[in-house]
Length: 137
Length: 137
DNA sequence: TTATAAATTTGTAATGATTGCAAATATATA
DNA sequence: TATATATTTGCAATCATTACAAATTTATAA
Ligand SMILES: [Mn+2]
Ligand SMILES: [Mn+2]
Ligand SMILES: [Zn+2]
Ligand SMILES: [Zn+2]
Image (cartoon, rainbow over the protein chains, first blue to last red):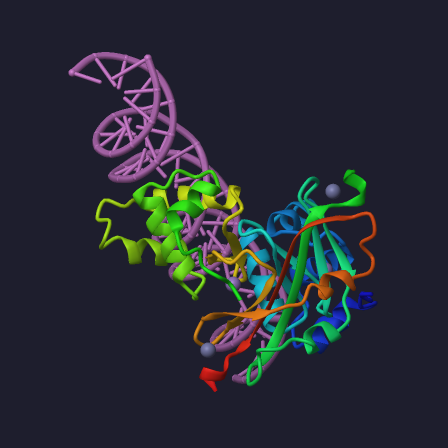
C-alpha cells in the first residue's frame, strides 16, 4: 500500500528536485490520485489553480520526476500514457468498460520464480491485467 | 514455446480471414519473427517482395488479426507498438541497451495467486521486464 | 540593493505514429 | 461478361509528444 509523503516539499528536495510551485502541485496531485492520470488529466485538473500552466511543463516535470525515480509510467494502452506516484512493485488492472485502472498487490516471488533469464539484469518489472471490474458487471 | 502454423493459408481461413497475398505475407513474417516487430519493421521487410504494399494495409491487417485473436499487441514503450504471433501466456523482456524484446515462459499460477481482484473478470494478462540482456554485458 | 547569471516555465512549431476516407484495384457472383 | 463486393492504396487529418527559443522567475555576485 502506497504511503503518500506527508511533506511534498521535503520529499522533492530529498529527491534532488527544486520544489517550484508547478512541480509541487503536479507531484501532490499525482500522489493523491488513485486513477493513474494522463498528462491531459493532470493539466486539466491544475489549470484552474495555476492559470498560466503549460502542458509542456507537465510533460517536462513528469519526465524530471521519472529521471529521479519518484514516479513511474504505466503503459497499458498504446495511446494513453499514465503516471503513478507509487513506484513500489504492484500490479494494474484496466477495466475495458469504464477505463479505470486499479492497483492490486503482487508479491516479489513472482519475479523470482521466473526461469530462462539467467545472466539478465532486471531493472523494472511490470504486470497488468485487462478485463471487467466489479463495478461494471 | 510457440509453434508456428505449418500452413498459413489454412490457419488464416480457419480464423475466418481470407488469405490475400498481403495478409498471408504479413502473417508469415510475424509468425516467423522472434523480434516482436513494429509496423515500420514489417512494412520495410515486405516492401521489396510486395512493392505496392501500403503502410495502411499493414495497420489494417494487424488490426484485423487482433480482432480475430490470432496475434497480440506488445506494449512496453509508449512510443513503439509491437506485435506478436504468439498469443499464449508468456513474458517479455526488453533490453534497454540493444532494444531487443525476448520471450520467457510464465506459469499460469502467476495469475491465480493474485489477491484483491475478486469479482473481476480477467480477459488479458501481460507481464514484462526491462533490463540488460546477456548479450549486452 | 542592483546587476548578472542560471534555472524554470511558457507558447508555438515540428515530429511521428496512427486513423479516416475515398479512389483504385482485385475478387467473387450473377 | 457484367456487376457487386471485398481489399488495397495513397494521401490528408488527427493527436500525443518533443524541440526550441523567448519570457519569466530565482539565485548569486558586486
Ligand atoms: Mn498503480
Ligand atoms: Mn512474445
Ligand atoms: Zn469498470
Ligand atoms: Zn541487449
